[in-house]
Image (cartoon, rainbow, N blue to C red; front, side, top):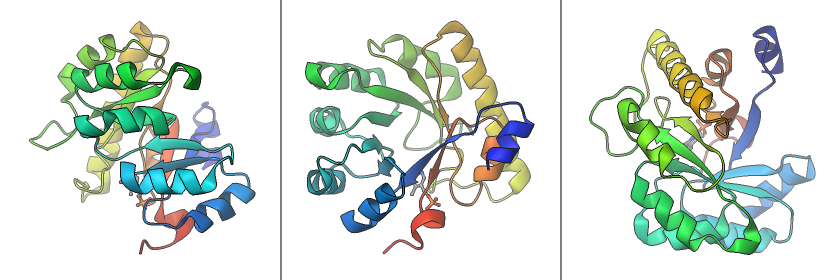
Length: 211
Ligand SMILES: *Cc1c(COP(=O)(O)O)cnc(C)c1O
């Protein structure tokens, strides 16, 4: 993984361990080996795990869809929310973020294939969400690789990753705080890193099959 990134002249991508459905013990085992960043899809499931593992110095990312009525809890629990897809959500997260926890990192979820889909904003609108961000590090997370909308063909996935990277570069040029491109999962992280992902979200390749 590191070699591909280095060959492309980029720093290696950060590894986010996706721990959804995995017990707190499995997280603790990886944490003991030095993996400190974990991704969860559901606020409720994450709340229980975070409580059990405190204070372990772990960094928690919400990578599943966030409903507005869970924004308060998410702003308190997580260090990152990777699924911001509407301005209203950024405002709610900012309002509920406890001052003592410091800035919340947010990523804009982009629907790179630009088709009808439930979550993520269309590529043409991603900058609008970025402008409403009053906190640090608005950035982009591609969901072209998402579990709900996988591209069957490798060439299609590679093209989507490349489109996402161009959007990211375009946004980063205008907003220096944009520094994270989260894309790639167990099945396609090598292609995502080759395309310029700065963070990959890996579940099954680390933990084995989900329960
Ligand atoms: C589950 C999930 C992952 C990890 O998927 P694997 O194929 O197990 O690596 C990554 N991103 C999102 C948004 C997920 O829901």
